[in-house]
Length: 308
Ligand code: CP
Ligand code: NVA
Image (cartoon, rainbow, N blue to C red; front, side):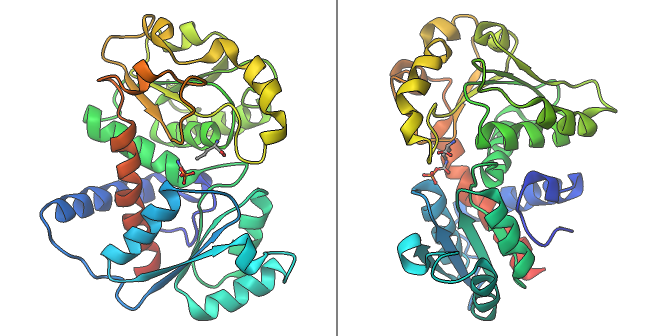
């Protein structure tokens, strides 16, 4: 992998992504055969979490454990990044102790500054702008289920948020068609779509933003949704729930989709809001395979970044 950090999907080239997916598949198969790979013995990961997490925290920690290393969980209460001491000092000092840093935070600039000031790799474990580990896992999972990315179309229904952005960006890199359907004022911005269009300009695939969820799901092979209220937006919860009412992934919407369309959600799901029980619990839903793959993808990522 040419990149030293994973701050956003733009850090990765196609070769990096293919190498990551190949190693992910190998590590997953080894684990299933009960083979241990202690390639990170004696190595330590610092995990800074300024927001809640279940999947990301546990999968990174288990990833380090399975590869013979150790992970340290640091909450806002523990280090109070930027208040108790500067991001720069935290980056410089942690770099003297640990082999890699993950950070989940609000402002994307915090991740950028941490990566700029660290001498060890920094991995974005979600910022308000992007969630690259999630997108990598999502596309790995789609390829695992479908065999390839050929002619695959993804419909993303809901908020043009961190998850929507990194998914769109990775789809562009992998030449997978992506249609987002969102209410007014919650779309992917024109500026973002222009940036993404640079990546797809030599291909016939489209990364697009539309309004109508029914139109988006019509030809889709994958239907993806995420919360209407991301972490940090709790004050807007009621307004958002009103604005997103017509954007629920439910049986009625699925009736407009192909019968074998896969259903994905990064989780946590708000059952009865962005997705209904009958859809998330249906045979088409792959949300738990998707969640499991966070572990395998992040093991590959840590191995590549730490052992390079
Ligand atoms: N999908 C995801 O990142 O889940 P957590 O917020 O639980 O880490
Ligand atoms: N968009 C959600 C994703 C959670 C994994 C959030 O930022 O809260």
